[in-house]
Length: 356
Length: 237
Figure 1 (tube, rainbow over the protein chains, first blue to last red):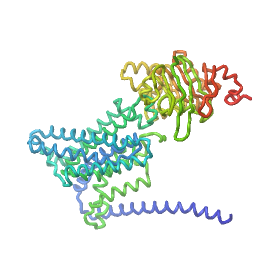
Figure 2 (figure 1 turned 120 degrees about the horizontal axis):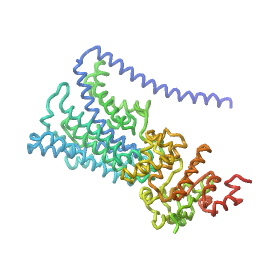
Figure 3 (figure 1 turned 90 degrees about the vertical axis):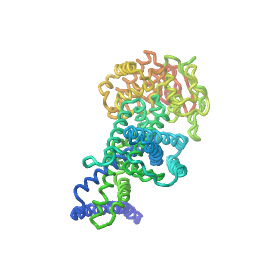
Figure 4 (figure 1 turned 60 degrees about the vertical axis):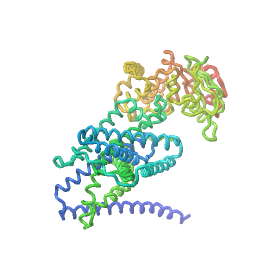
């Protein structure tokens, strides 16, 4: 009996030690980042204009992440599930729209009516992604409603591979160059014109999303289901319909994001959804999964850190091609958020307490 | 023909049988109460009626409509209002949005406004807090909101699951007064209550559930005078 008590004490201390290690690693990373930033700024390899361009590019990239992240976070809100096929929903729109864009380009319509073409591409991509998202929900998730939560996660990965390899099988694994849109070439003040198109596109989509959620019956139904699915059903809300609407809206936004992404990077490929998908998931977690403003903020923050981070943090150490490390930065952020602040930056959730 | 009839309804959760052939009726204009200990199957009975659980056997009829295998959102539209256990209001939505959801299937704005005014006359406190998120209301106000929300669809029958739970006695009394007033205005009520004394006070008839079966039924007065009920639910010697 006399031995038992001290053992319990060391047991308590062991938890402290593991926490100490975690905090130590966190502190070390912060020090590396801080020191690197000072060294970089002292060395002065980059001009103010270059930093500005990094930030502008980061915001454009982040705005696209934000659009995709909203799809993750909305689906999480109503189903408490991560739709890991969402990156492929994004890819489906962008890939399919390549053929429309290519056709418009060859026929000369893209040159004669650039704005009409652009809007047609955005809508077409949105509709394709919406259809894919709805099909994935119907086929891969709905039959499993009520199954343990790990099960739809596995089918999500399955659906993701299915879509990737379907597109690879249909259209080949090569990279296809998106036709450039003539009116979006060149710069306007400090911005690339494509970046302005991204900002405007994302902003309009966000405004429409907020209006949809706040002002329409279907939006009210989605918010009710996100808070309490059973109570929503008792109000006469068709829960399955609200869920499929959520997928449709998230899919549409992913499709818009797909075209905007293609405008910036001017190429598409069957695998293009993977990284942006996981980055957008990171953005959603960063902002607080289930939280809509959080997804938007998380996207922008991630985009900017990813854009300036490699040069700012690592250039000072003399690392060559530091920008190759941007994915490392993104996923380090994901891990740090999960460890230190699992509720994300905005620290709250769309849904109330979870009910099982 | 009764307004609501359950015919030998069975409900299973996995291997556990929560309801073992429950039959009961509620006539138009009645207040009927369902008494029983925790786990007797009171909540399961209400959940079966509004479609939140599927009966494994038996039938549930609303007048001449078979509700048995319909989905909750359809059953609501036939006129079954359910105030669930624990109130289950939408904490982040405003009082008005909660009420709007109560009449989710109604699209006519004038009609919605009229019904909302009716709820506000019943519960003036809700009118004062119409823009506030539901989660910021006190327990009593949340119960008012839950009842008001269910009234928004003008149900033919109102199912109430433990409306007195966690409320101060004064509030319980005012809630029960509202229930009586609603009943006088023509609303049929099926009331599940822990507070058997209050429930039998306002009810016309009652049923007693034990481990998933109806063991006793009768007029509220007979039940209140029954020694078994007194011993088990009214705390008398």
